[in-house]
Length: 214
Length: 373
Image 1 (cartoon, rainbow over the protein chains, first blue to last red):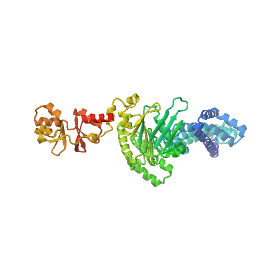
Image 2: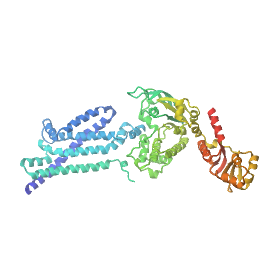
Image 3: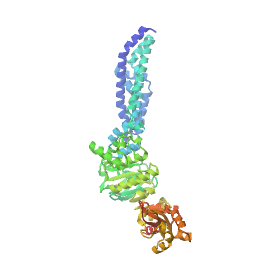
Image 4: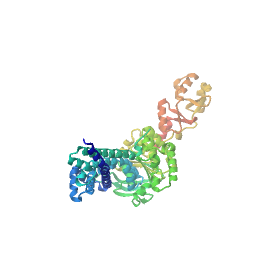
């Protein structure tokens, strides 16, 4: 162990961590913006039949190793942060879409029937009944994706995406264990932080009626 | 007024119609109960009226207007809808649940708040206690009440109720039925009520429509159906106790005899035979000092007992101190009490006051009259 290298690695953490977080947040935001509406659409009667097809495609994307996706995006999007984010988005789509669909199907059909039977327009039923009730399940999907994206994000360094991966890759090249420990360690901490933070949100978004306090 | 004309519904992928050539009229202010075994199409009919299901052919009119001319959401806002599973929104408070339709109509906050409290009180819930609770915090019976309140929120002239009291235990169901009948007597809404329970149908309905395999078998008042079942299916559906069920349609008060009995006090017991002969009565009611009825004895009892003293007569009379019935109760209750006390005759009370007597013969005659009609 070399203390100087250790401190050197640590001094690079603030910058790389910021890049990593930005990368994860942007990827997640884009993935949510695609997956959530997609999940909603696939549970509407008109598009229900497409559900299996789309989910299979997403499943195939998910089955690709993270490294392969990153490598495949490079020829298309070039080097840098942009292709890294593109690759992460592809990886983050499935859990969110799958949980959105599962959450929406999980809403008690009687609740929907009653809401509709009272004359609530379809949009209102979606926004005031279905989505709030499906929200805990959807957030669980986002949490899965977030943890995933944080870990796959370390591979972005290979195509010049930066982030905590830079520290790890530098460590691997020089065979400096200190760099690898610092990079991987902060990657793990970041994953845990996202997981905890989102599970807090999940509890917060659980409709109050579900928690009976007597 | 709701009118169905030759309405048929065939679900996609099926050859047998769920509802076949149904023509039915439900008058304004009338409760029409659709009854039949499960799968007879009764719920389908209900759901066609608010366009949750579209009919395959035929016309449904509400106040002489084809329902297909109205936007479905608009139509449903004007029709109260209660389902067995209630379907309260679990993430909204009771007040918010009840306010759904008023909010769709765009009522202002103050008006909604007032209406919610008014409705909660109407269905027998304490507004201060219930308003802010979530559905999961209520009992089954309370949820059913909220379901009814929610359906009535914007005071719709028509209510569709699909086994609204089906999910609660029989005792609570009985209460809810009684309370709803009381409400309906004031509200006079046009109600379509679905149930598979013939007793509920008899109790709730102004009219009963009996369905079998998607077809209307018989439509009429409970009395018409009970006294004149159209075919074997209806007869079986009603059950072997058809006549006893018919007794549930009449109050004891309606056939109480007001002056064919004698009243006697304890100190007159020795002259009881003389008194009954003079008044030509077959039953005698024993009163205590505070003119409360405390026993009952019939001429048959006296003959069976033979020559006995006043003490023995008092004993026989007092053994039937509970052979009295409230005038508001039903003839089947009276019959049950007669069997319980092994006595042909019951005293009829209004509160604590004696208003007459009812005998097994009176019930028999009542049945004969109604059956003949």
